[in-house]
Image 1 (spheres, rainbow over the protein chains, first blue to last red):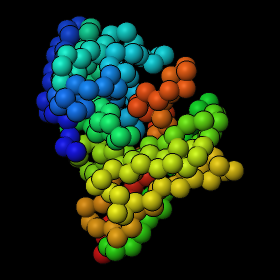
Image 2 (tube, chains in turn purple, brown; image 1 turned 180 degrees about the horizontal axis):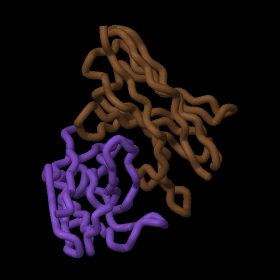
Image 3 (tube, each protein chain N blue to C red; image 1 turned 180 degrees about the vertical axis):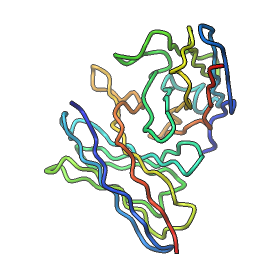
Length: 110
Length: 124
């Protein structure tokens, strides 16, 4: 199973919105509403930000939102803050109890 | 609070095996699965597979299925990951993570609580 495709980098100024894409196929992202997103700071464990495409765990700011269209899922960060600068990974179910991560996107707050 | 605490860093020689533990607390271990994820230096997250804390069912990523074994000790609320025939490319941080279920008990295929990571270094 190949990794899902994410842009290596994304950036935005404080207060702006930025969207990170996660492209898969009709066998993973397109087939199931089981896409989740993780935020990871350098040297730290990942943190769940979005699950089941668009649901937010308690404690995650509503500035973070998720969506999906066809074989591509997206994470949008609105009202960018300096603390949002981190790596972001998508994860998708691929059937038969298998999962696959994306390649990761480094988000820079300018 | 809910947490997963992993065992300490390991240094192994090529060809050896390593076993990493992941002790759960703050929730009922047998009600959730545990995923294993690794991250080589400067690289992406890589899913290795998961084990059901209740019935011990395991699912391994095709990439690792010949070399990895997941086990659990329910009395100790601990999951284990053993990787054999180690190569230099296995140098990475290994994470365990709890599987998230919805309010009806169905899997969401997301990971909501993560261990702190265990650094495994393969060096001759």
